[in-house]
Length: 306
Image 1 (tube, helix red, strand yellow):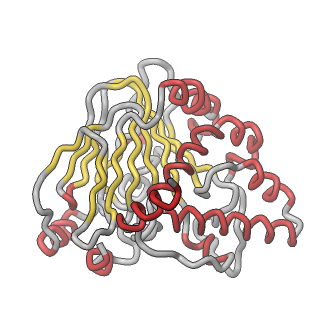
Image 2 (tube, rainbow, N blue to C red):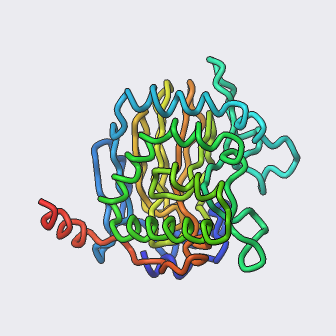
């Protein structure tokens, strides 16, 4: 993983076929696998590449929390769709990457954060802000997403303990900064935000072409979840030679920067929640980036807690 990370560009999007082919030639996958059962994938040095947890989210949380909260955000989702000609640059929100719902689900892709840097507004000239959606309906949304947030945080505690603790430290530091600088709304939002992650992306009926998350870090994990009433579909992870069955209730933990990933169109309605964080916020409050998650450390941690 480390050498692969070194070969990536700073702003690695994963949507350049020629460059991706070059990476495949430099770092060919060992083989091709289709995963259907819970699996942890390691590199040859024992670094964790992927956590695959089908059925991790029970039906109650899927319907009563995630789907209900997503429907509650319909007004924000509908405003997120881009209808400009710049499809390549705005593929995450471009209308061509969404499938019309057969049951009235509002299409869209929004990001929720109690404190992040707006695009094109980096430190030190600018400071973190609450995302637009939470500025309007912060208390209601934080309450609605609390159980999925706790579930994702608990999963991260197991998957990548050091990242879990550094993220909590970051949120504490951000809260102290907000208090010292009289940003009361941010302080309130941070207290209501129960996730260890600092950002949640909510996507409805979104087709995700193969890509990387360019602003993530190689040693960090995002947690990707999917729910809904939809037909068979696989998530493709071509640079590690893996496809996974991507049924409702699935949870995937992986580095969105290292692992190129994508999901095709599906028949039915599919909602995806992706929990992630940004290094510029960690840097703002002087929290170290941390290291890769090691399988031996996970096992040792489990024995210590037993």
